[in-house]
Length: 335
Ligand code: HPA
Ligand code: ZN
Image 1 (cartoon, protein in one colour):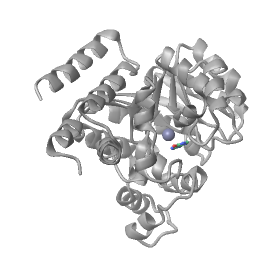
Image 2: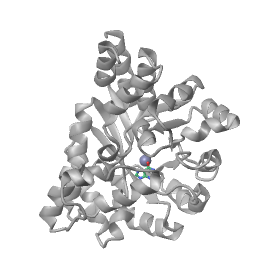
Image 3: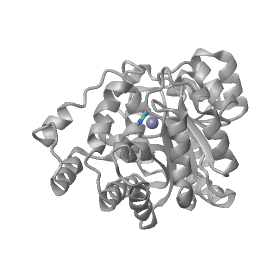
Image 4: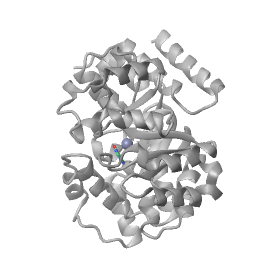
């Protein structure tokens, strides 16, 4: 059991969330409400039946149901409501700043205009109780040409997002497949991140760094299989956006007690804790902290380190970063 003090520190500490797919924050209740509002027929008779289906064997088995859930999103207001609900929830967890992934191709493939998606999400960020910015992800099971077309489509909205990422089915879709589109995004001054080393091998982390020139690695937990890679990630203080509950639900690790978060920190890596797809994996960011600290030998010094790492890795002006880091230090000094 976590003691009261550590629990209060984890939940109360200021933090940034750097790995959250907004479509993965869509709770079953909101899926049903939007289905009704939009006249969409769902394959599940009830909220409970849908939640029962959240029993995944790997990343793909999750993605199939995650894309089905997103099919209820039709209007700009739907994207607004989904995003506003996440931001309120993150605010309650003392998240000060969120960098939010969205998957435009999931929606444009269904015939929705790009602007419907981004305008709804962006407007909710403008009305947000916390700082929020957007990272547009390309679906790696689709072709690079489709990613390039999506990047072109996004250009009229260039001021509404800060970076690009790479998500969806990892194995068989290595970073190299997206070399040209990432180079184009880099030229546009966008920040670059990619999922790598979740289910894919450590070599995918190497190529995300060397070929795509990413500034953070999403997940990255399989890096420990390569000592050379760990040495490099530590030297470069490359942030890893680790998602503990996701890793258990998608069976990257059997149980939380075997998760490698403590080993990543012991290796000097800039790990952070995040929620990935909180509506599907059993909890928002504080629940991820509590579950990891409950199962692993992690203490107050690790909590502080993880909070600091989250702000250090954020894509924000140095001055805002310094202010948040000072807030973390003050929080622990006064605790
Ligand atoms: N991995 C890859 N793609 C995703 C994920 C993830 O954890 N969540 C949503 N899309
Ligand atoms: Zn993810």
